[in-house]
Length: 528
Image (cartoon, rainbow, N blue to C red; front, top):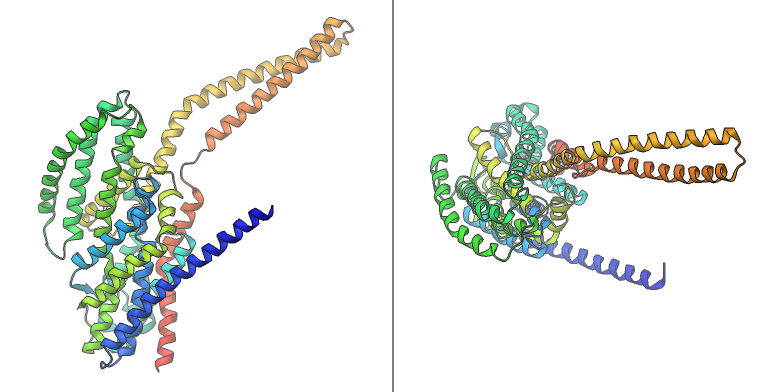
């Protein structure tokens, strides 16, 4: 390694360190600002110190939600190159914050998902300690998962934190174990549903466009239909999940509004695709190009809905603590003050901008290779799975759905590749058998001539020729075997990534629970 290379590495390391310090400084500035604001504005309230500390932990939790969970919404779009990393961060930050502030709701459940009985707490102080412990534990676990490059459910993180703190405060009887059972079921339901739906969409697109001889005609006919279906799914999704705090509609009404939007989208997109097709080639890459703009809209809408729903993960316990501090009672529902909502909205956007790229890369490119069509299938899985699950009363996690969708398209690629390669493999095996048969015959002829100990020039030349033919045939057989082995071992989904992510999913709730219990005992020891 020469001196120039060493100097380049040193400069790169120094630049990376500066960037890390800048990110840490901005994150700390935000958290200290929240701590200061809470301290100043609530200085005359009993337990104001705990409210300030809880606000600090709420800010920390919001930063980590942005760093980890938001990647699921924009990761596929970035991995498919429909969006650049910078563009994805700007879009997601704007729409996450907008979703939180516009449609985040005025009221959230302070006991997340109803997993702890409020009557289990002796007094408001014990509740405040427990929710503070839950916030910090959830944030710490998300921070650790982000560092490991594992996308995990923020909902499960805070659920684990509330459960662990509740058990530490009042014992195992305080936990609604039936609710915890449904949450555990989502570990399987969410990724399986997401994977199946994403794979079905990808397979349908391949059959109706990519595998067609005349791809241009297929594009003009099918792309407007697929974009309209996406519009139908996303408008329905937003009506049911994204703006439910502003306008409440039932499922059929949401479905009808979505269908009307889909019809309008179809009429607008159809002439646009016909016009664009004039400059396109009869190639699968040009099929992908037509899904770029829909993917940008999908990333924005998913981010908006995520901000509207998951802001409660950051500010729900904080809103409960604020309510308990100000009213000295434990409420199962609490109004969210605007400053608390801003902590969640700004924290999620800032966390995404500072630390989101790592998980965006993981979701977008480190599990399986994505293009626009595959990313479209994952986005559709994210919207449709939530709609179907909400109507069936099934517990699902948006994180698990998105990652399941990535797994689904990856495994479908493997299946289709191996199905296509099976015939080629059979041909290779037949050729290998013929080559081995020929090699055996050449060896037999060589051994016969050598046994005769032929002295003639003709015998000698034939033996030399046989040695060369045998060497060539052995090399050919070696290459055939290598080709067969390569074809049989191709994997489109990285197995190490699957193991790491599934392990993180399984231990999220217990890990957050153990952390929360330990923090609760520490707080109680300090206060008593």
